[in-house]
Image (cartoon, rainbow, N blue to C red; front, top):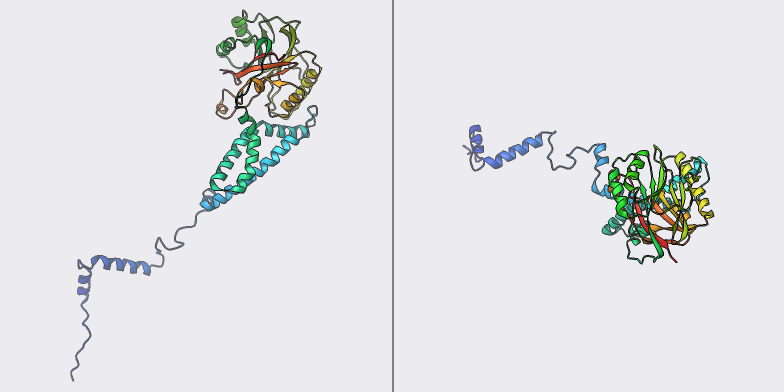
Amino acid sequence: MIRRNTSKAQPPLDCTFATLHSPSLRRPTLGLILALMAAADPEHKPASEPGSQAKPSWLRRSLLPPWQDRRRALRREAWLLVIASYVALAFAYLWPQDFRSTSQGYVAVSLTAFMARVFVFHLGLLLAVVAAVSLRTRQWRLLTATVPLVVFALGRDIWSYRPSERPRLSGEVVTVASVNLLMVNTNTGSLVEEVRASGADIVLLQEYTEHWHAALRSALAQDYPYECHVCRDDSFGAAVYSSRPFISDPELDLPLGVSSLPQIRALVEISQRPVALYNVHLLPPTSLEYTTESRLQFADLLDHLRKESLPFILAGDFNFTETTPQAAALRRLGTQEAFAAGGWGRGSTWPVNSFLRYLPGLRLDHIYLGGGLTCSDCRTGTGRGSDHRPVIAKIGFSR
């Protein structure tokens, strides 16, 4: 019996390749072949297969962690900043002050507290950013913890921009200017013109050198016929220029601290009453040695003011701000800062001539008043060429 083969005959190999090259089947068949080849290759993995990408390096993970990890880290850091701020401010404002102590350990801790109080405004700006981000991301607990710090750190300065009524003066009104010249400043013309334009009756000058003496005497001798000075080739020369005569010989070496730097006390008459002028320049707290001496200078200054029987104008470069323990001690003594009475805003005086001028500045130069004197207007100048802005105040008796 003849059996018929009912299975399909297999096409020859040539026919198979011909079919593959058929225009209607070419693309899908080639895709299938490529897929089969990829599956046959054990080292080949599709890009979409999980785990196909190489694990990022430790350095990359550290510098560019995933966003969720970054958010958690930022939240932790924000909490650490807030907690540290509470601790730092509590320490800075509660640390007991003994300006006569020369213990290096005590002075070092006091310097730390001092710096925390000097830069409280800058800390407040940073905390304000934390509060704003917390509000935006609805981190309510973090926001609640941050707001009191922001109010404490920035409230005083924000309040200084409010409209306020200025004190009224009775009798004669004099204009007093305190100017740090900067001993290496050779651009004398700009500051000389600023002093002349201020209309000041009395000018108290710091960092007074021989070249400044020559420039100022030649330009201002007619406007200020009365002057006393100590020239030095460092940052601690001093001078007082006055349009009204001194009642007695000025004291050029008022003893402050142990460094014997020149500090001036002179007497003039305002509204037919004798008034003491103090021109001081305290050492900057740039080292433990300078900080110790600066605190001793300030302790001696407090003693002089306690014994002062006359109304006084205390002006100069104090190298401390209105938030420091030194300023608080002067307020307890009953003195009034001219800018606090007659100024507006923060009244920063330093720095002027470096890249730091783009940051919020500090008020290191002050005019303090005592014995019934007050201020109806106070402003800061330009201080071109110096690293400090002058402070210019209209001063008279309040009664």
